[in-house]
Length: 206
Image 1 (cartoon, rainbow, N blue to C red):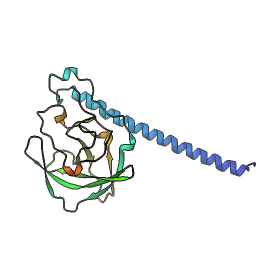
Image 2: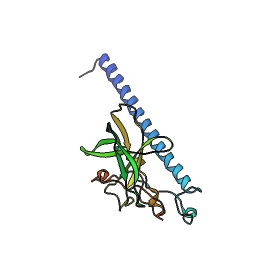
Image 3: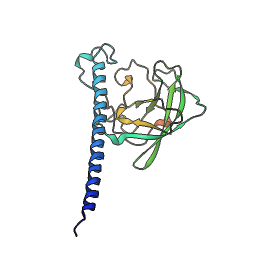
Image 4: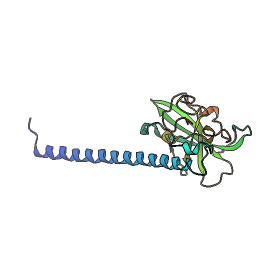
């Protein structure tokens, strides 16, 4: 069957559109990967400096932190529920004395078509740029990742936002993973994910 000139023009146009969207997707993914790599390089540089959480004896030997390969599948646009009247939550700390946080809301996302929730916290009397704090555990803890869980920092959402980005490639260890002298939040029971999250920072090896 021979195609008409009009059909060929339509097919060519569709092909051009497909190539445009594919190249745009590749470009955006490349930018995303580069941004993650930059954050990790900057953190390695900080860990070699005078304000490093590492014990002074470890700093000369430090090369880099260990991470899972960046995987865009673990970056979610989660459904956001903001609590109308945030309650104060005494966040347990490794040093024993709890610290006050607000339960700001919750984020719901899906992994393999199953929904999971994380409570979003905001520190009371926080200094600097306001942000949301997400301490969590998953089934990589104690194996590939630090046994005490990991953290995420999320930017404050816009008013009336229905979603929030939860990017586990940005998950990081508490300072307690590098130095027992630090006092760190303990992820609450409600943020214990019953699945593996193979993304973000791995366990620190001295």
